[in-house]
Image (cartoon, rainbow, N blue to C red; front, top):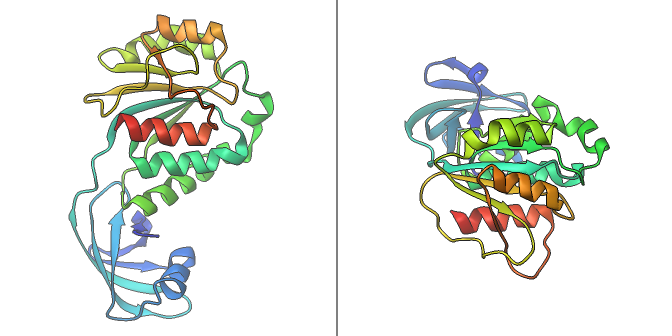
Length: 235
């Protein structure tokens, strides 16, 4: 935890917070902090700064906070992600938040198993928890937005063309396609498929909506690896 994230309900006055639970445990056991020590803090959706521990015991800690620094800028990236396997999903959310993705759209695909959509990891509170873990790692306070689109064809035909307009639209897919560009300036719309990749019909639909196929080379990567590699390369 490189940043203590502060919820609105933590504030007992404009410059004072009271923390308990996981954050208190982390302060005591990992930071081994005590009264008078200062830690990096950030208000979710707001500024970052320092918090000085005023009191700390087994039940709660109180900190005086000074928030005067903006969080790092988000990547101007909208990620269209075919719903991953649940065991990968949480890690992918954390990676996306750490890397600064601004918007995530979870999309259905022919190779996405129906059972994936039943995972409890799609509950809003679980999604938020994993995004917060990514923000803590990267020292950021701005949560990515997450949307769920279970109907591929209506979304790609009706909404994606307008969403991708004015952006660099890319669909990652193994094959004889141009390599993924590097350090793209300006907004990006990036589609990443499921394990096994998009089917040809889906690639055609994504192309018709304005996304151009690109690839990362001959190696076939796991989705969580491809997400990190593509975002890092584009940014």
